[in-house]
Length: 125
Image 1 (cartoon, rainbow, N blue to C red):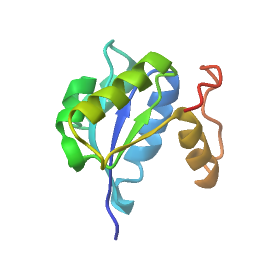
Image 2: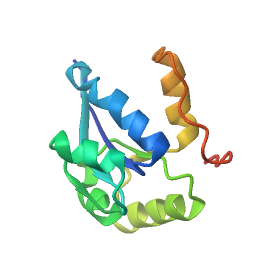
Image 3: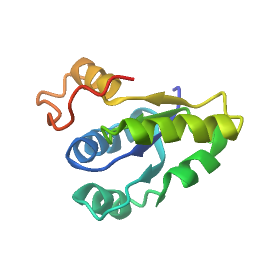
């Protein structure tokens, strides 16, 4: 089975629902390396209860190529730019950043049955 090592940035309403679905996929090769959320949210609490490594964007970047995909679910262009810049400064050409639109596509393809919350205006890449 192929392992997919992911990190999630942003555990608000969208990130919490996405995290819950990814936790359910761990036996299918989804490995959540680390999550980042600055404020206390239900998603951060869920991550801590699941024993996931939590921290900051810098902590995720420090994981290097141990992270294949960073799901940026913050809805913030500034956070996405910060992720790009920090990955480039670290010389990380392995890790890709998946914006919320990619998470929504995955959600649809997984046949999750319910929709991710519509919280952020179309953030694009």
